[in-house]
Length: 108
Image (cartoon, rainbow, N blue to C red; front, top):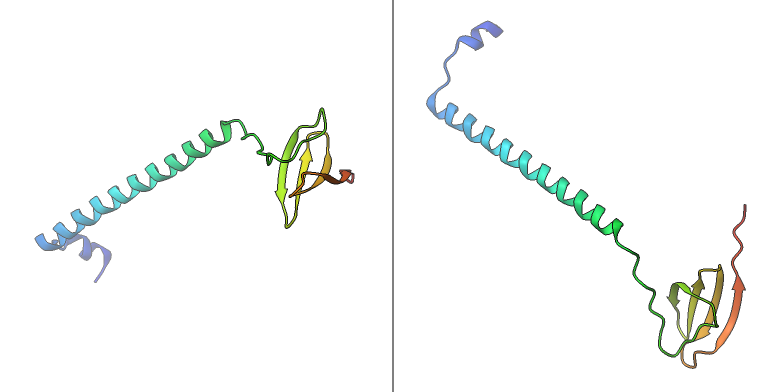
């Protein structure tokens, strides 16, 4: 059987109906995929355009004057705060007392 013989064969009504169903299914699935990808892209853009949330510091901790928290990390019995002026400050979780302050130096 050659390719030209295959082109000349008639398709049964049942096969034609299955092909129409598959064509519609592929079209619907393609549209769903496009919609999903666009939704993810839009949500990422919206999320990345927002201002970063303000860092929440526990009530019992008071940063020294002029210090602004950039990040907060909680450990067992201690809380660490990284400030905007590149300082790592470790506080006692219970008392809020400053245990240690270390300047952050980035290697070049």
